[in-house]
Length: 233
Image (cartoon, rainbow, N blue to C red; front, side):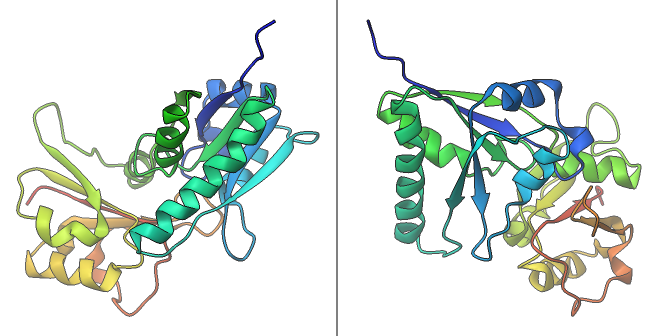
């Protein structure tokens, strides 16, 4: 009899509100024996906390995954390899593993690194889509991202603001918290501060909404999960 190898699922949990998780995500987590969740150096597991708001996870094996916050590619790669190795132990034992991902698993998600490593070793992987932070932020602000069917939309990390602001159409600047002073300066230089809005920690208890970034104090910390929406100038 052929030995069963588990499947590695990338499960999107949305930006923060458990009600934004899909039925597909909930059912997969209900049926998956092992739940892998990114863990901060201080022990926090935000994606797991969100999932627990929608799914009963008692009795599941929780596998913390620790990823390096270093900008050194070698350090990051080593952390990805270590996490993939931890996941593969369960897959080799015939157990499915669901890795929780904030927002959508296809957008700036760590899952992709582990997926590449594990697929190269013959493992099966499946991605379950979810609500992105920028779509949730747009809804929270009550504004369209594209204003209709023709406008272009550019999505980039906050650190790339200066590079993308000259492009036509609306912009989404994701995970802008760490580079916020530089991002605000780039928006000011482009004359787009008053056309920009920001939602921090969308859907979480500490959510903050700034409809006009011309009113924002650049010295004020926004946290890591800050999403900026820029209307076409």
